[in-house]
Length: 150
Image (cartoon, rainbow, N blue to C red; front, side):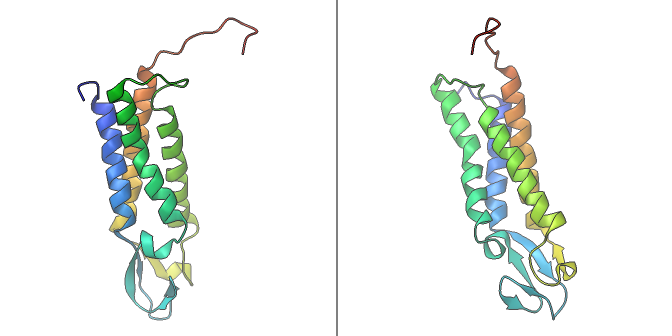
């Protein structure tokens, strides 16, 4: 455990926030005529209730920083820079969360669906995951290969 730095702990905190954010309130319906997750009327809905597939993707990606921490704590050898895969997954999560929150909110009419605090928690989790993993990737020295080799 002594091998873990603040970067891995930051990424792990981000994964924890992302995982918890899935179950928090993401959307608030402000019109009694709006429909979200099969329900009509006013109410608040979590990311778990509103997204049948995305919820599983977010939960799987939330585990990635903990896998990174395990790899670093056990000092496993990798063929890629440590933290690189976690950073790529965090970028994908940020894109997905921003898409379902800013570009294409679920429900009809989407103008009557507002973002609640849980969406911001999940977004902050993705940002922390990316920051921690990217900083960890920068610590890893890449081996240089001679020209013309794969």
